[in-house]
Length: 112
Image (tube, rainbow, N blue to C red; front, side, top):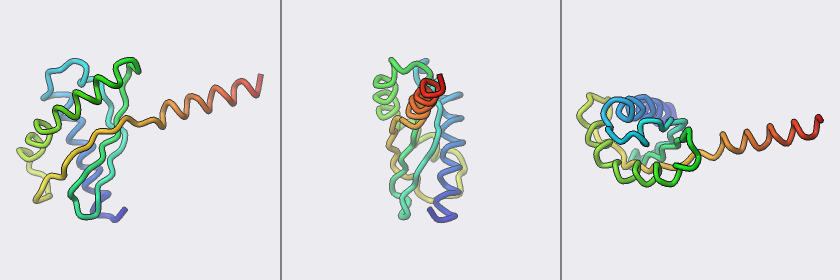
């Protein structure tokens, strides 16, 4: 990732997290954590990786986030960001945390 796309990705993580915390009224979406963001080099698409505290609500939260991406994109446009065009948002569940827990459990079992 170039410096520019990395800077924009970090800016999107910060701003989307703030929007989810303060602007969205859906209680399920409020407890979503944005873990990473990958922005295409042409700045047309941003893949936003997120996790949920309650794994049983993962599918519903992803559906709700992708349904609310128009609202989130509008809120991003209202904020004075340093980019001309807000990239299209695609929310993806981040499996790395659950994968890390699985590896940790395997290591614990081996050590016992």
